[in-house]
Length: 261
Image (cartoon, rainbow, N blue to C red):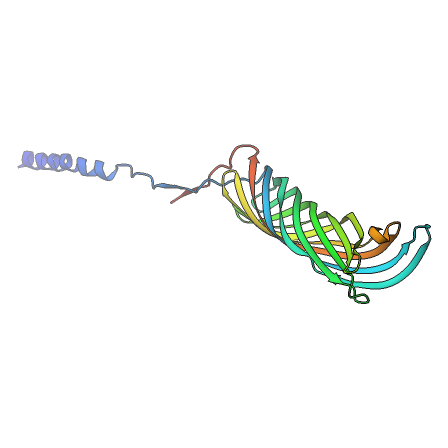
């Protein structure tokens, strides 16, 4: 009996070894989730843009110089005009991504424009001022906040320039004065930019450009040859542009985020 008892215990112990070994097997690690690659904003870029622009001009006639060189002062409002039209051009700049939330940059932009508008003189309704803004440019600093790794909300501020033309006409003598000037001022704006691919982003932006009041000298033509007319013109320009940039990325792509289950 003693021999049978010892044999039974040994057999039980032997049969339990596989089950114990199975319980001791190492469990497979949980799957690792890897986030999609994140694109960085540090680098330079070039691009193109288009959109609409509109202006507001207030004009005051301050006098003229006759052919003898004598200045005759005047003080007369020539009314207001609101030129508008399309804008189209390009931009270039550089950005530096400080951390996961902030990007700082600088950008230069130049646009051609077909903005035109006119108004009749309030005191001489037969005369008309015809305005054209054929180009403008800006150099601005940008501060961006990343709403997510590929979407930034930004603000900008800097300097602005615009090239203006003015032709005064009369139904009696036709064109009688013409002038042109490049005006300087400021630019402020806000925008939203989306980096939709490794080297590409698209954006939409609103800007206000203020140019204050500047004196424009108009040269008399035709029957007014020899005269120079002086007009103080206050001007603002607003624009909404959409654009696309090709980005030259600096450095390696950020390391993907790894999460454990």
